[in-house]
Length: 223
Ligand code: SF4
Ligand code: SF4
Image (cartoon, rainbow, N blue to C red; front, side):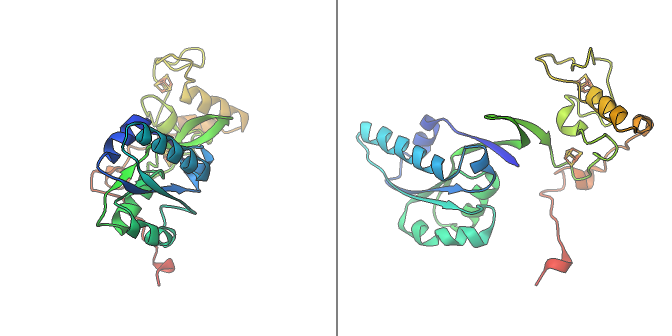
């Protein structure tokens, strides 16, 4: 899932300065799971902003809402009535949700309340780790289910490099060497021969953003 963190309240207060009535819009999907932008966080952030503005002698009215998924126009549409009443929207969805809201309510400012960070998994309560960089051509079948793009500091498609020491990456900080993890995993599942497979250089036309935003178009799903 997409992971994100709330921006510092002072930064949010700074870009809300010109506004006296806003909609604070959360998202009940990924960002709710990492406790950054769900219903609960909408309430907490709303109170914090109101208190700070009251203290500064510049009250603010905040309408609150939380979409099922803010990256889907059909759910964002449900915010329309409230959006028409306010001067601006503060979205605490991921960057995709913020852009969906900005596109659909194009005549008012839309601000991001979160810093969208990565796609990751839960390591333990309150700790999330990056696991995928959406490279567009997954190689997990070759690498034993361990991603070399997101987990190797050099994004080596064929590793390890010479810096791997005792299972740790040369960058230190107790970061495990992804290629050691790949080796261990392949050994466990009896596929060590995969280490000899050369993963070809990526075709950057589809697997990077050099040609602009990537698009998936499924004819079978279109109306
Ligand atoms: S190889 Fe890694 S970055 Fe690419 S799609 Fe698979 S998990 Fe994601
Ligand atoms: S030590 Fe391992 S994880 Fe670190 S850069 Fe080299 S191959 Fe990648």
